[in-house]
Length: 179
Image 1: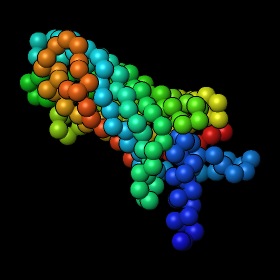
Image 2 (image 1 turned 60 degrees about the vertical axis):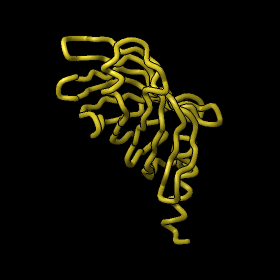
Image 3 (image 1 turned 45 degrees about the horizontal axis):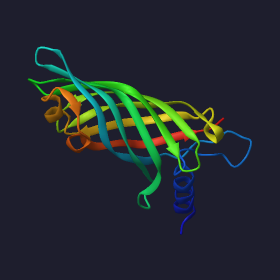
Image 4 (image 1 turned 90 degrees about the horizontal axis):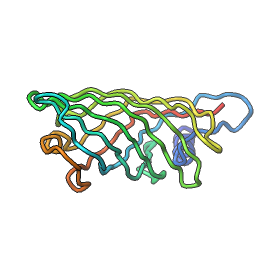
């Protein structure tokens, strides 16, 4: 195994718990990984204007990270927020927050925003805003893509059944650093 492969494998193992921890007191560059979560939506659809619906709720599910060696389970995520969907052109925009719950109980928090279209996904940015326990002070972030059958769900105002609203969140080159 090359030194680069070993470094990426180590970074994946460390990021499995949602953070890159430098091995000295000096600040180091974090190594980015790809991460994703499959989700179920719990929430409500509200008609917010003629031909516009807003989903208000939480996306929740397992998180996996991949540094090129294959996905590894990292913990759970809950992302409350809103996504507004134009029912005529299928455009969407959303924003919210996320809490990553690592397997050891530490947490990392962040904010997201996205815009996009049904089938293409809602693309935007994710930024860490802090954490707890060993993840206190975490910074970094990445691009974000949220995909799911949100348009079909948005056409039926009222409570959302989890089986009707499932999808995936993808973080490309997610970087997390600690002070």
